[in-house]
Image 1: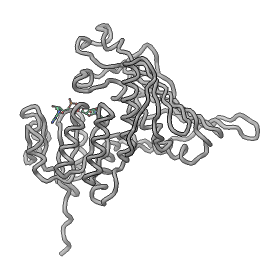
Image 2: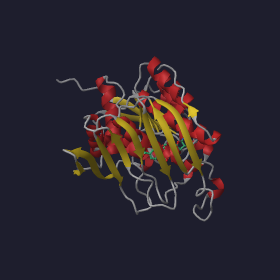
Image 3: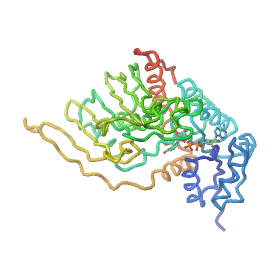
Image 4: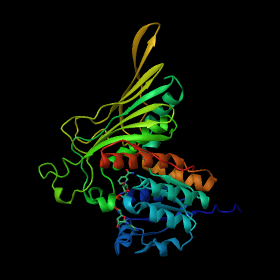
Length: 366
Ligand SMILES: NC(=O)c1ccc[n+]([C@@H]2O[C@H](COP(=O)([O-])OP(=O)(O)OC[C@H]3O[C@@H](n4cnc5c(N)ncnc54)[C@H](O)[C@@H]3O)[C@@H](O)[C@H]2O)c1
């Protein structure tokens, strides 16, 4: 008789909003994994989370230590940003691989600690950037990676919402740490930096504001709003590349512009999706039309690049990639160092906007 394949033992830490997408994916992966348990610091929340999904046999805890004692192969960390580091480190030290929600952490120091613990324990640590698993994000990476643009020297990340301040834990500094910058800004950074293979960030000069979140005319929970809702930055990258970053949760403008790659042989423009909806252009993986600009025999050409069929399975594919990497003994599907560089920029934008001047990004040898 064929020997039954051992299923991965999986847990979920933090059973709030985004944990549902992890749960759905793990349920779909039931032939390969066993969802063993979950935990949340809010008493009874994890139990309710599983019971509501009809998963009464899955164990639920009000503290993470009891969950992590169950000898898990993989853990999804779905807590708010300020507790990503402590939960990820605890899970890795208990012997589990980790898929942690984005952004990696709040500070660069925490991201480095998470990276080092994963390296020391030889565990996978991957961050939940599901837009990576969209065919059109692959298309952008394929075009830029093919070298057709020549030397890329300037990049602009676009996006931003016209009216899109989320509520709940996203707006409270003690829980989220950072606002729009880390919430959706980390996606737009990941989109363009993954296309140019994540060069090291060197310096940041940034501006951030909170003019909409703090104004009751535009946001009904303005009294509790303690993070940024808008930020722009100029980031210098290794290889003499300038990165122009723009992100907002709210503004009197339809868009913060296109995403653009300027190369010595050609340029690539990616229009934001959902302009006019008030919410679009957040780089959640849905992108608008793509155009390439080049010079053919002295003629200035603009070419429309056909899009690939978009995927509705980005969240599932993110979780599956994590499970496959554990099963097949592969490295993190999104290299951990890339997420550290992403966090280094978020950290730099935060520091520079607070100080009102350019700051260096200091990274140890990792
Ligand atoms: N990938 C995506 O598309 C996406 C979408 C939304 C949110 N997120 C990210 O997911 C994370 C959570 O967001 P959310 O909307 O689910 O927030 P949420 O507040 O709904 O859920 C977070 C949960 O974590 C629990 N928690 C916090 N600290 C804990 C700890 N130390 N141990 C155990 N449980 C703890 C909270 O009690 C809460 O139930 C954030 O980092 C956010 O940026 C990602």
